[in-house]
Image (cartoon, rainbow, N blue to C red):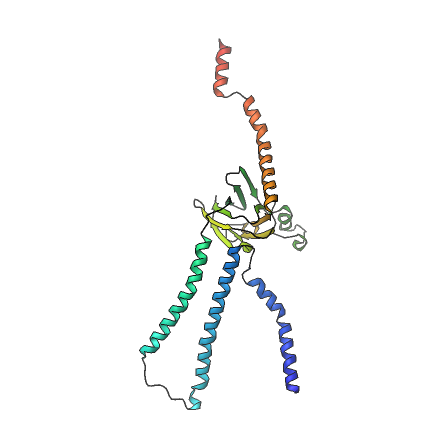
Length: 294
């Protein structure tokens, strides 16, 4: 009875001791995310993982059983055959069937990842050293997104600022990408200088930004909030200071935000237009000089 109690206590202590490890494993695993694609990718990942675990358990179980049972000290006698057609057929057909069973859901998910049809908003993302430019295609709204000043100041050598005191250190920007909740957003990704990579873990998507080439991805964020990522392609000295921040708003809030951005763009362009109208062009100046000469 005492042995049973000791075993129970030991098991309880083991479980309590592994709690932090389990929490750390949750951080290491793929995130479920906030989009249909991210959930499907996570589900596919876990399905393949458990299939691999089952295969490992079966293979190592047979190996350990064979080593323990058919050892020389127990009087085991080696088999005299060196070839078996049936065995070769079995260990060829079974892996093929397993691979086909894994390929079907994987192919289905890959097709969905590349299906950008029916998008309700298109955003062009251009990577620069070391910032992003977001352009709302067809809306006339464009801006740059750079590392927030608070993080930029704290990262400087001998700044005297404790990075732990800066909220979202190295994961905050001055102008985040804003998208609507529940709408399919198509993202066109390219670069102006070197190769970058646009990645937001909660969306389950990552694509390289390549100069002279346009990649694309899509997502449909189902929960409003702020989601953070980073450039994950080594792109030079300040690669580690190139965060991605996406703010998901309700459709009504997004429409109001987009209208405000358009108004601001029109207001900023209006003075330039008026000045351009007041300044005569080259032909007009030439004609005026000719009249003066006469």
